[in-house]
Length: 177
Image (cartoon, rainbow, N blue to C red):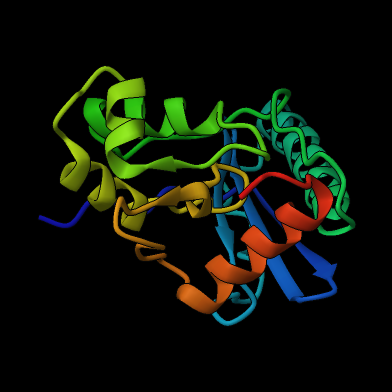
């Protein structure tokens, strides 16, 4: 049985030098970030989801995420400490990996194995790679900073994007490689 897609409360299209990204939120926090090649029209609020409190929370997270992305693409810190992420639909293992990943600084790179160790799962490098492919909030949860022990590794949005994001960070933080 297919999992029900969450009801999005708000979505915002963000213009960047690299195209339009779409941030999607639920009442719990940031749910997804669509890259320019996958970005769709912002979803319409579902009737049930448009309660005042849920909208207020979603609007606040959406604005904060938009500011983080704008600063990030200008070479700024892109600090996500004040963002809440809606990790519903992920397993407990996947959540722990994504939470460990969200603490990775802009000037840090880890291997898949290194992230597995940091999250408390030594030896789970391949499973970490699988979680990186499933990350629906790239950039804000920076899976592009995770590399293979033998080279660049993969990226859910394609290696062109991974290289561009890493280059942006290297230019902003000399020594980030």
